[in-house]
Length: 204
Image (tube, rainbow, N blue to C red; front, side, top):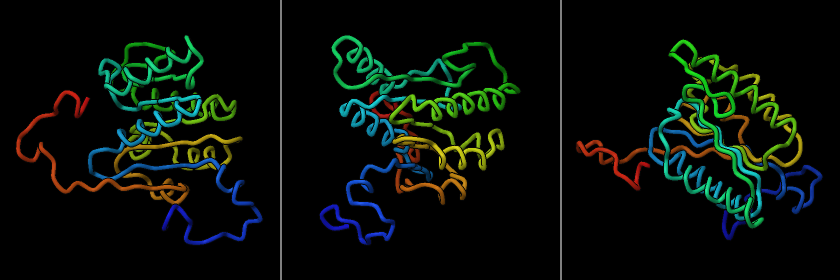
């Protein structure tokens, strides 16, 4: 893809401009580090364009606050105060989603994941966000908590120009097939291999 030019021009009846503005479904998968980091970097770009950002973190504890969350939420407040950038929402499944905080046990996780996906489908239908990041969403699909067929259909049929990024290991083959952009992070070396734990500013 030299100088940003595509290798082929599809016979789809669309102009270059129309093709450029098609919504993207991106998947960041693989065993390497950086899947979520890349997605949150894209959220920063989107915020700068005035996009409405929605982040939905599956699996992660609601008590664990990562650095990107702090930054993006501050940017959301900056938008509210000055109009700069775009609005930001950040939700975690944890022990219950941000909009319905509740205690939960291991047995409740599947129901919580399904609840989160149902809310995301509503937002897709309403075109609430310009960019949705479904962080660690591959895991509830892999564990059978959410039906992959329903996910693929809902994303394929989403209206308007909504970009969606899904992160996590072991992305389902149907999800990979449906995506426009798939990146696999492959680990070559990692500090933890040498017994070093995560560091402030690197992992969170």
